Image 1 (spheres, rainbow, N blue to C red):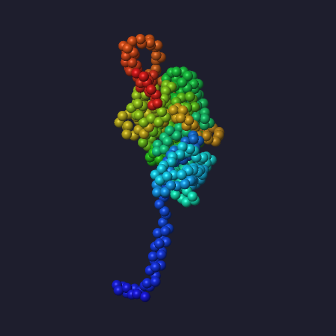
Image 2: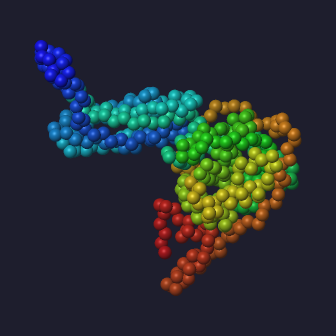
Image 3: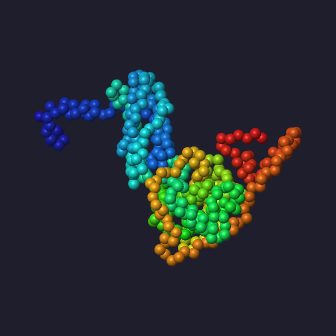
Length: 436
């Protein structure tokens, strides 16, 4: 026994070796440094729309030997909690120090019924574990958001997956279109919805206006969306849910209008602003060449050419229902140059369909919206008005084939003056080519 000279405490010298032994045990229990580095890129969020449209969950996977020894056979196992992703294994034969292997086969099975049955968003994790000779040589873990079946992830994920929530075959959409047809007939106009078959912007305007008046007749009420919904996304009500609850956010209304317009053969748009969303429609059979557009000046050019119209959808929830023309004036005001800082982008539904982003499947139900079902005082709907003067594209006369260099230069100069969608110099797809 020994007494400390400072505080007089007594301790046993025999205890010292035991203390050293405990320190050795602590040191040996620390995890060994990883001998491989796993690199992976997963979608930050999962929902039923991504699963139904076959969007890859994993877009990149690689393993690198960061140790000093050659590794033999390596197995990389994928797992998730909750088990929304099915377990999958990749194998590598031999990996020298400093060597990197990438994988091309990244298909992962997703538990679709689990996603379609999810009523609330939950937190999940995805894990990759690399083993060699029964020993763990590397790990990778990433948190993911598992969204409710009717929840859009916002612009931080895949923005144009929003087109999946546009459901033209919803039974309530058919009821709205029938009510719009009745409004056209009662105003003495053609009561059919033929899309662009009439090749007249005026006729397309009449169809869109009738849908506007029919939705005004639903007497909907506006409800505020969550803050910053464009970045973080939000849950979207279906047409049937809107017809039953008679409540809608700005995004709900934009999606509802797009569903009705697409059902009639027209090409709708959704414009996203900071904290707001509204809809639009092509008056001519055009598109932007891509499903997501962030070119506000180009959008204004299309508006000035009357190729399309934007309209403020929340105006349908006002006590006094404005006309469709008033709504288009409000929609155009949203994209004026002084509001470019608020402009987030635009989703072209037609181009999204060409990207194979299909509408979400939903359970078949009866018609939720019934004409005259509102329990309030009788609504005064805006009248079906004549379309304003629109700039219709005139058919191009046949041009003589140029025979000299001067003739070709003159034709090129003439085409430069054409500001319509026929001008391939102004309306060139991103993947296209043009010979001058």
